[in-house]
Image 1 (cartoon, rainbow, N blue to C red):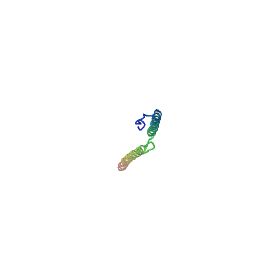
Image 2: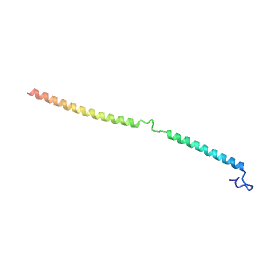
Image 3: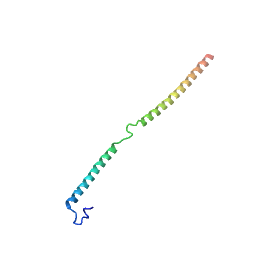
Image 4: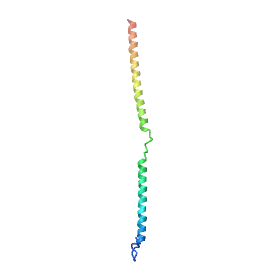
Length: 92
């Protein structure tokens, strides 16, 4: 701006140097932004997170525990019928 306000007029080579320097700074900023954006896109904070598989496994374990308890109940009921049938046959 000082060069533009110079009473004898701006010197062309100085203005060209300032413009070239400014354009180089803009290009450097663009390169830095491009690299930062690329880096941000590659960032995956939950990539190694095992929360979902771990919770899924815990849910499966709970389901299996429930099924096993139901089988145990069925087994007790069947054993109860066999015992009652044996008692009934012993009385006859």
